[in-house]
Length: 173
Image 1 (cartoon, helix red, strand yellow):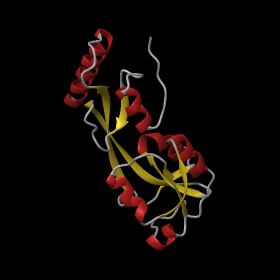
Image 2 (cartoon, rainbow, N blue to C red; image 1 turned 90 degrees about the vertical axis):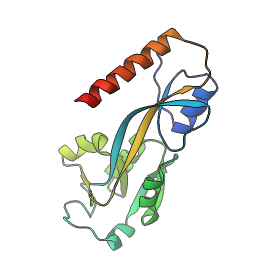
Image 3 (cartoon, rainbow, N blue to C red; image 1 turned 135 degrees about the horizontal axis):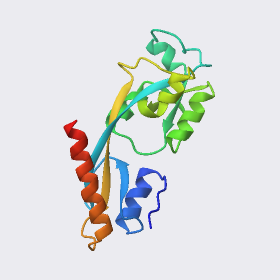
Protein backbone atom coordinates (compact mmCIF):
# COMPACT_ATOMS: atom_id res chain seq x y z
CA UNK A 1 0.00 0.00 0.00
CA UNK A 2 1.27 3.49 -0.84
CA UNK A 3 0.72 6.21 1.76
CA UNK A 4 1.77 9.78 0.89
CA UNK A 5 1.75 12.53 3.50
CA UNK A 6 3.30 15.92 4.11
CA UNK A 7 5.41 16.55 7.19
CA UNK A 8 8.31 18.78 8.21
CA UNK A 9 11.68 17.45 6.97
CA UNK A 10 12.94 16.53 10.45
CA UNK A 11 9.84 14.40 11.08
CA UNK A 12 10.36 12.62 7.75
CA UNK A 13 14.00 11.89 8.56
CA UNK A 14 13.09 10.44 11.99
CA UNK A 15 10.26 8.35 10.50
CA UNK A 16 12.61 6.87 7.87
CA UNK A 17 15.32 6.22 10.49
CA UNK A 18 12.93 4.42 12.86
CA UNK A 19 11.26 2.43 10.06
CA UNK A 20 7.81 4.06 10.08
CA UNK A 21 8.47 5.25 6.51
CA UNK A 22 10.30 3.37 3.78
CA UNK A 23 11.18 6.51 1.85
CA UNK A 24 11.00 10.26 2.24
CA UNK A 25 11.76 13.33 0.16
CA UNK A 26 13.52 16.12 2.02
CA UNK A 27 15.62 19.21 1.41
CA UNK A 28 19.29 18.37 1.86
CA UNK A 29 20.44 20.51 4.77
CA UNK A 30 22.84 18.20 6.58
CA UNK A 31 23.24 14.56 5.56
CA UNK A 32 22.50 12.18 8.43
CA UNK A 33 24.80 9.15 8.73
CA UNK A 34 21.95 6.59 8.99
CA UNK A 35 20.35 7.59 5.68
CA UNK A 36 21.00 7.01 1.99
CA UNK A 37 20.40 10.03 -0.27
CA UNK A 38 19.32 9.93 -3.91
CA UNK A 39 19.56 13.42 -5.46
CA UNK A 40 16.25 14.36 -7.10
CA UNK A 41 16.12 18.03 -8.08
CA UNK A 42 16.98 21.59 -7.13
CA UNK A 43 14.32 24.17 -6.34
CA UNK A 44 14.72 27.95 -6.66
CA UNK A 45 12.90 30.16 -4.15
CA UNK A 46 12.32 33.90 -4.43
CA UNK A 47 10.97 36.59 -2.13
CA UNK A 48 7.30 37.42 -2.86
CA UNK A 49 4.72 40.01 -1.92
CA UNK A 50 0.98 40.07 -2.52
CA UNK A 51 -0.86 42.37 -4.91
CA UNK A 52 -2.22 44.22 -1.87
CA UNK A 53 1.27 44.90 -0.45
CA UNK A 54 2.82 48.38 -0.82
CA UNK A 55 5.81 46.89 -2.70
CA UNK A 56 3.70 45.32 -5.43
CA UNK A 57 4.41 46.80 -8.86
CA UNK A 58 7.62 48.53 -7.82
CA UNK A 59 10.53 48.02 -10.22
CA UNK A 60 13.19 48.48 -7.56
CA UNK A 61 12.94 47.97 -3.82
CA UNK A 62 15.58 49.27 -1.42
CA UNK A 63 16.99 47.34 1.51
CA UNK A 64 15.53 50.04 3.79
CA UNK A 65 12.02 49.39 2.39
CA UNK A 66 12.46 45.64 2.85
CA UNK A 67 13.61 46.01 6.47
CA UNK A 68 10.34 47.82 7.29
CA UNK A 69 8.22 44.93 6.02
CA UNK A 70 7.07 41.92 8.05
CA UNK A 71 8.41 38.63 6.73
CA UNK A 72 7.19 35.07 7.26
CA UNK A 73 9.91 32.42 7.53
CA UNK A 74 9.78 28.65 7.33
CA UNK A 75 9.69 27.07 10.78
CA UNK A 76 11.90 24.15 9.75
CA UNK A 77 15.61 23.70 9.04
CA UNK A 78 16.85 25.59 6.01
CA UNK A 79 20.08 25.82 4.06
CA UNK A 80 22.70 28.33 5.10
CA UNK A 81 22.05 30.21 1.84
CA UNK A 82 18.36 30.57 2.77
CA UNK A 83 19.12 31.61 6.35
CA UNK A 84 21.49 34.33 5.11
CA UNK A 85 18.58 35.99 3.30
CA UNK A 86 16.57 36.25 6.51
CA UNK A 87 19.44 38.01 8.35
CA UNK A 88 18.63 41.39 6.79
CA UNK A 89 14.84 41.04 7.00
CA UNK A 90 12.30 41.57 9.78
CA UNK A 91 10.95 38.07 10.46
CA UNK A 92 7.77 38.41 12.51
CA UNK A 93 5.94 35.17 11.65
CA UNK A 94 6.71 31.53 10.92
CA UNK A 95 4.88 28.74 9.13
CA UNK A 96 5.52 25.00 9.13
CA UNK A 97 4.89 24.60 5.40
CA UNK A 98 4.79 26.52 2.13
CA UNK A 99 1.00 26.59 2.17
CA UNK A 100 1.13 28.59 5.39
CA UNK A 101 3.79 30.90 3.98
CA UNK A 102 1.70 31.50 0.84
CA UNK A 103 -1.41 32.18 2.94
CA UNK A 104 0.40 34.85 4.97
CA UNK A 105 1.90 36.44 1.85
CA UNK A 106 -1.55 36.61 0.25
CA UNK A 107 -2.91 38.53 3.26
CA UNK A 108 -0.80 41.45 2.01
CA UNK A 109 0.86 41.95 5.38
CA UNK A 110 3.86 39.66 4.91
CA UNK A 111 6.64 39.00 2.45
CA UNK A 112 8.02 35.50 2.19
CA UNK A 113 10.15 33.09 0.21
CA UNK A 114 8.39 30.50 -1.93
CA UNK A 115 9.62 28.08 -4.58
CA UNK A 116 9.13 29.73 -7.98
CA UNK A 117 7.12 26.79 -9.33
CA UNK A 118 4.80 26.96 -6.32
CA UNK A 119 4.22 30.73 -6.57
CA UNK A 120 3.83 30.64 -10.36
CA UNK A 121 0.02 30.37 -10.29
CA UNK A 122 -0.43 33.47 -8.14
CA UNK A 123 2.15 35.39 -10.17
CA UNK A 124 0.32 34.51 -13.40
CA UNK A 125 -2.98 35.62 -11.83
CA UNK A 126 -1.43 38.95 -10.73
CA UNK A 127 -1.83 38.11 -7.02
CA UNK A 128 1.90 37.85 -6.20
CA UNK A 129 5.12 39.34 -7.43
CA UNK A 130 8.77 38.42 -6.88
CA UNK A 131 10.77 41.19 -5.20
CA UNK A 132 14.32 41.81 -6.46
CA UNK A 133 14.42 38.29 -7.92
CA UNK A 134 18.06 38.53 -9.02
CA UNK A 135 19.21 39.30 -5.45
CA UNK A 136 16.53 37.71 -3.28
CA UNK A 137 16.66 34.07 -4.32
CA UNK A 138 18.26 30.82 -3.23
CA UNK A 139 18.33 27.19 -4.33
CA UNK A 140 17.55 24.09 -2.28
CA UNK A 141 18.52 20.56 -3.30
CA UNK A 142 16.04 17.76 -2.60
CA UNK A 143 16.75 14.05 -2.19
CA UNK A 144 14.89 10.81 -1.65
CA UNK A 145 16.03 9.24 1.60
CA UNK A 146 16.01 5.62 2.75
CA UNK A 147 17.41 4.00 5.87
CA UNK A 148 20.87 2.46 5.60
CA UNK A 149 21.10 -1.24 6.41
CA UNK A 150 17.38 -1.90 5.97
CA UNK A 151 16.07 -5.34 5.09
CA UNK A 152 15.59 -5.85 1.34
CA UNK A 153 12.17 -4.76 0.10
CA UNK A 154 11.43 -5.64 -3.53
CA UNK A 155 8.79 -2.92 -3.95
CA UNK A 156 11.04 -0.20 -2.53
CA UNK A 157 14.07 -1.40 -4.51
CA UNK A 158 12.03 -1.44 -7.74
CA UNK A 159 10.67 2.03 -7.02
CA UNK A 160 14.17 3.41 -6.37
CA UNK A 161 15.47 1.82 -9.59
CA UNK A 162 12.62 3.41 -11.58
CA UNK A 163 13.18 6.73 -9.82
CA UNK A 164 16.90 6.61 -10.67
CA UNK A 165 16.05 5.76 -14.29
CA UNK A 166 13.65 8.72 -14.46
CA UNK A 167 16.29 11.07 -13.02
CA UNK A 168 18.83 9.89 -15.60
CA UNK A 169 16.35 10.28 -18.48
CA UNK A 170 15.40 13.78 -17.30
CA UNK A 171 19.09 14.77 -17.09
CA UNK A 172 19.60 13.67 -20.72
CA UNK A 173 17.02 16.18 -21.97
